[in-house]
Amino acid sequence: MNILVIGATGLLGQDVMRHPTSHRVIAAGSRDADIRDAQAVRALLQRHTPDWVLLLAAITNVDQCERDPELAWSVNRDGAVNVAQAVGDVGSRLLYVSTDYVFDGKRDFPYEYEVSDTKHPLSIYGASKSEAEDRVRELLPQCCIARTSWIFGRWRECFPLRVLAQAARHEVVTAVADKFSVPSYSRDVARMLLELVEAKASGIFHAVNSGGTSWHEVALETLRLAGITDVVVKPITMREVKWPAARPRNSVLGTASLKRIGIATRPWREALAEFVAEIQLQL
Image 1 (spheres, rainbow, N blue to C red):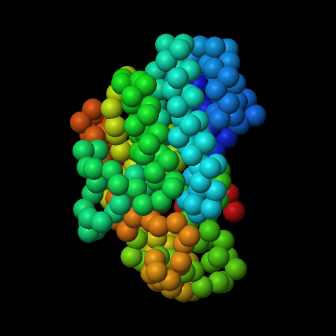
Image 2 (image 1 turned 60 degrees about the horizontal axis):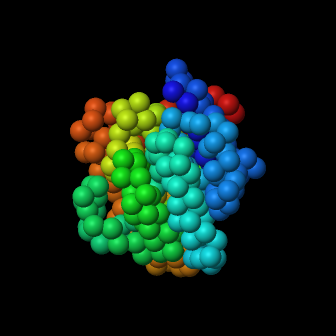
């Protein structure tokens, strides 16, 4: 099977490319094709004729999307439509990666959002990804949509790495304590995506580690796992941060959709422990 990964240079994309598989996995970054360019996307797919396309490319900076909505819509929605149309033209299958920010987060923690829950995004980012989901499903009814959240991993800046960097400088770590989601290890999410492909899955799935928590708890756990005891972690509220874009207070994704087709997940604490241990080996 040939799998084309669009967005292969990002945090998640790099782990997809590194995940052991018997399939041929082809990397494509923005230099290979800007997904805003329908003709370039079509040429890319015609050149590789993949069995599956994994669309990971997106503008994921929530506040950047709020400041530049034209860019957000052109990449996150219109770019996804361009890919979906090209996928249909060459007869491939599509797996589109989306986000927990399609939900408004008004259900109190520890409620977990499942794929049957109604979407209601609060931000340009969430709205652009939500509309992309809808348009992609209209064009390709058999497509697979995988929502994920709070991804951390080795290849790009992420929250646990920031916590460890601040600790190394003996700085006070501030972390939001009243916002909840699922920290998801990019290596685990990469495996889930490839297993969805192997299962020839269609429909919507939540590809995350299991269990919801706050950034404050993630910071505390990261330091505990690293054996760091002399750094202060200061809890703050969402209101104190004053983000330009609204965020859902609780966007914990449940994994019942994955379990129904036999794809395993593991608790975020277990995944974080593996990540921190690997980072420490490199220091």
